Length: 336
Image (cartoon, rainbow, N blue to C red; front, side, top):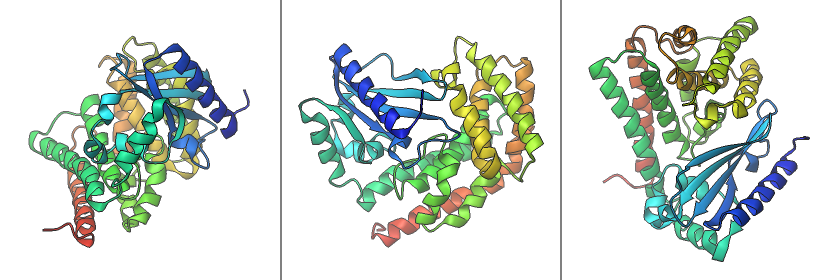
């Protein structure tokens, strides 16, 4: 299949039409994400992000559908009740921003989207609502830092994931000052531009340092990617594997990491370590794949036997995030 932005948009429209005919509970379908950007591809791969709004709650919250080795459908199924309070949506760090980021509406039964978006977007970009979306992410990052600092947890797949979530929350607290939050593949790729917009571009070196303390050679990348891909294949065989890590999405991640490892090494390291840690959470502790993941934690994240070596640097970064939000509040007259 020839993959172009135009062909992906046609597939999105076709999917919406077929899905609406098959499921009468769907009242709205809208397209968002990278396909609405100028260049939706990383390493020749992309996905089609669709939001299905239903009249009732669905058992399946997220669905990944295979289209080709390089393209998948990523569908979120959402109960319309989540959209009933515009005030809450304006403070929602994820659902609200993508609703108001000019998505492409593919189905709008009885003008549901038109009415809902108008209700939410009217005050969405007021500074007080921007802060309401950003500050909870910064607070969540600080809370994790405090809990880890006090309890000194062991280095496990779950604690590494919490650590990576802390970095993500810190970055997206700043990204929300100028737009929607950044999703997984584009987090460290697009974060520099967002920090530049907010006037804190110097912080990108701090974010990058948590994922890759120094450049690595092509040979080293090849070795790490080979070991990571082995774990991806192992995870796909697990009955507990999340759809996002299934074989359907293998190229989505591997091609992106290979492409980014040349000119955007921290962005490649983010995708690799984020997915590898999710995989490690599925594997048996005695699995041979776990040993490779632990080595990667030491190499990329500088976390081996404990988190202690990185807590001081992370504390400084979180201080900078909190100070940036305070300055934004002061500049917009939101300090009592």
